[in-house]
Amino acid sequence: MFSKEIYTARRKKLASSFRGGIILLPGNEESPMNYADNTYHFRQDSTFLYYFGIDQPSLAGIIDTDNGESILFGDDYSIDMIIWTGVVPGMNELGDKIGVTNVKPFASLQKVVSRALSGNRAVHFLKPYRSDILIRVAELIQSDYRSVPGKASMELTRAVIAQREVKSADEIAELDRAVDISVEMHLAGMRYARPGMTEAEVAAKVAEAAHAAGVYPSFPIIATINGQTLHNHYHGNIIKSGDLFLVDAGAESINHYAGDLSSTFPVDPVFTPIQKEIYRVSLDAHMAAVSMLGPGITFKEVHLAACRTIFEGLKAFGLTKGDTGEAVESGAHALFFPCGTGHMMGLDVHDMENLGEEWVGYDGEPKSTQFGLKSLRLGKTLKPGFVLTIEPGIYFIPELIDLWRSENKHLQFLNYNEIEKFRNFSGLRNEEDFLIAADGARRLGRSLPLSIEGVESVRS
Image (cartoon, rainbow, N blue to C red):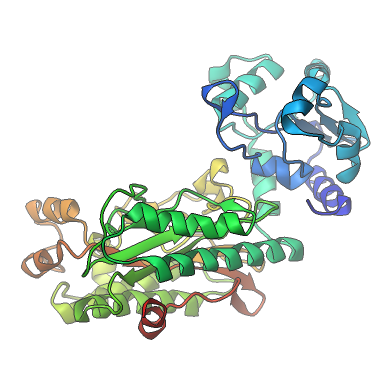
């Protein structure tokens, strides 16, 4: 938790964006797995955390934009709860920690919202992404739950994005810590993996590094020999000599700021010659993207630079041909790179994705519908204070190769006979996290070995 002054200033700034009404920010509830007392790991709503900072369930906050007052809603734990959870600060104490003096029982939330509605005051809320919160909001605003998403406040959505997307010095320090732990997670996996192990054993070693630092992974760990599957959470394969191993993992700091890194390394002590060359092309794309980072450039331009580097680099293997600019404009590169170069990062690993990619990543401008480019989560102009990932990769996806070949797709740019030779290569990527500064960009946290020599030195 940050200081009460930080939370107070955040709420004051948000309220100043409105001409009237109340802002409703519900916190998350516990979520049962298979019965009420066996719950998933609790994760507080990130926007509630940003403005109210309290990391426990069954809370809500209201910000009155007319008088600037904030109200915290929740109940003190009963002795029946304390014997299971231990002593938890009371609501008044929690309110004091975040600069809120008006603390009310949770049951009074309905009365406050109903009073606002009866006075024809606007009730601003964000589009719920959980069904239990959707139902709660529907009850609070006395509406059919099916109509709630359409009543979410676009004014609030845009105001929250504008505030959260620019990270403060305190947030950047949290992000540096999260990335430092993320680096340890990757190094643990890189040092540990050996032929004959299961992917699960490596994934466990990666997770262990996060837990040993007193935190949790920021998302389910990807640890796989099938790097061509972009979000592969299956860990049941035996790793063997000749395989590439891809890890995509990050830590979430105590205050819930995320790290997100990817690494690819050989299961053997060194890359094979062909692995080394494909890895080098991907790394060139990574560096091309990094070199462009800075305020005033659109991230779409950064992404397209990575795409062009990959397409041009694969010409050396006879996989691609023709004019690189025309090929990328037509989407031919997406056979090897069907996703985006990066995304915003902060309290969420894909920061504020629940508020809509078209707003978080594009300021309301329509996204491309072209295969590959439509998966780019961030395209808008970069500003100082933005935090984002850089993660281009090269993927040989047999099912996609077969489909495009059957459709004779992009024949002027792709040599399918040569591409066929790589159908079992799998895939690779590297990923780092960056802060956009006034004069360029800074990599967050410690550096993770990216060069061929650096990776092999960890593996040897």
